[in-house]
Image (cartoon, rainbow, N blue to C red; front, side, top):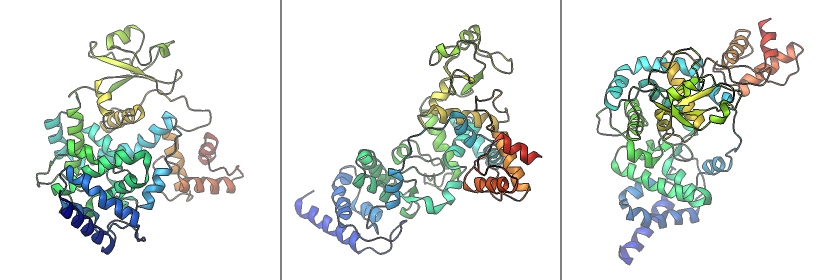
Length: 407
């Protein structure tokens, strides 16, 4: 780019950013000259990646300042980890199973076509959809969505820890916009740029996005077929094995902790005393699997096959992949875990959590969703009940509280 053209472009972009009207997908705020300067200067990098001046203008029309909500969410990223049973309870429960089965019926033709084309079981796709966006419900909460180019530019400009990631994702987001798959107003996502029903970051979108409904656009925001096909494409391209499960729940024998992380054939695991709770044998003894015991030595065991690790390409977390597998089994009608997690005494399992919320609702204390999750509404209802019945008003769901409700 020659010097004169570079100067004219920078001047044009500066005028555009400073003089634009209403912000796109953002709250009113004062112009930030330093942020505008960063946007202007970043065009040189974007242009080297093939982003046209017209696309860049369109992407940043009306963007005057960093997104303060993005910076707040970036700062508040708690490091603590939930216990595995708390994580699974919140994602694998009667509510998520029920909605998944409804969606299986509603999108039966689409799911059948995706199974045939990609070889990925429909229940796995439904479980991922649930885990990522609560079957699209997250997208309806527009106040929580961010305009992706502004969000990523904010991180690249103001968050040193995420700047490299954000620059890479911003270029990818601009390529999505340039492709014509989505309009700027629809290019929304999380504070870190995860987008659509299946929460793809921009670089993953460019690798795996699919136009499954045949309308000429790869639209994971508004098209369920496109979103589920994109998820299926990711799994297939990362080695999904059609017709195979993600893993098996097993009853660990004494000393099983010594084998955690080891990989053996299913026949070898059986010879060591690892058995399925149902008593059924392993159909393919030659299949290899790794032992995981996410709750420690006192909890259930899982023999994870190749497909478990393929799921981790979506989210590199054992808890996430286990949640997908367990929910997929329940959506498919295979039932839940046979063994109990080693919960602390007095705490509730997921079925008891649902019962507690249901009883509170029937008695008029609670008006929210019966979903097994105890947020502010559930805790306020518990405290009201406790106060009226002479119990310590700590707002905690416990066995003691459930017994009081039953009585």
